[in-house]
Length: 273
Ligand SMILES: Nc1nc2c(ncn2[C@@H]2O[C@H](COP(=O)(O)OP(=O)(O)O)[C@@H](O)[C@H]2O)c(=O)[nH]1
Ligand SMILES: [Mg+2]
Image (cartoon, rainbow, N blue to C red; front, side, top):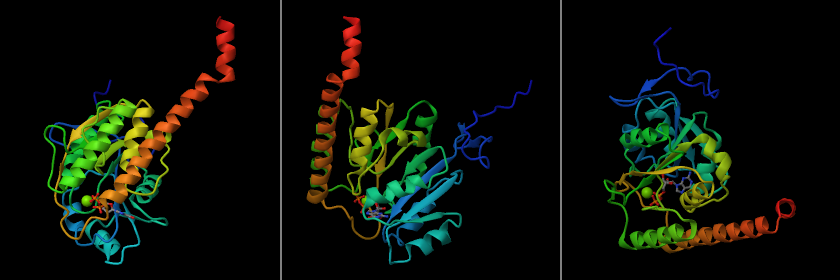
């Protein structure tokens, strides 16, 4: 019998299935990894972003938010095989959802284009996923993580909103509004994303808990945005995040009420009693 390892068939992409690729000196993986990068006028930062992306990535999808500074041209120069997707709507959430639809790999990694994320960390995210996690959630506040980019007001807001999510949804997160995360593509079927702005990370974090997915936090260091300024407005976007938390909470209550009054359940209960 052959002693060569064979990966489980993914059935996703015949050009990439069937081969293990080394992702570190200790690990080889079979599933193709897609990196999705939302970018709006990030031409100056892209050299730093692409410099740290590992060569074993299956594909890079850059979702362009109508950039006017040559973002797309620079991306093509730096990573000739980059798949560029034009965003039709507005906002980071809309960009990511558009990018997820274009993915052909089995694992999706979300990476910001401002130079704040270190691509060398991708191996930690992917290791968690191939070891059994459904969702590998970056955390700047887990041991080993950190941030150079957050202002005190953003830290306070993030902490308060994270505490609310933990209390309301039974999560045990140490970070909430962070854009560096990874997950198996099939998770998208369970979380059904529908939002447009910076609340996207919160929505994902809540929906994965509601869906009962296995979440593992990955300590991550967020570096300073290299050029330009953040598109996030602490108060405006903090309120959008809060709105998502409240909406998801009331949806959950409504679902519970519906379950309690379901005629189907009533008839089952009737049969049992
Ligand atoms: N395509 C697209 N990307 C966006 C949009 N808004 C923000 N981004 C990108 O999302 C990432 C995070 O945005 P950033 O402004 O750095 O916010 P912060 O990291 O929360 O300070 C960056 O790569 C931005 O270029 C948008 O409307 N469309
Ligand atoms: Mg940023």
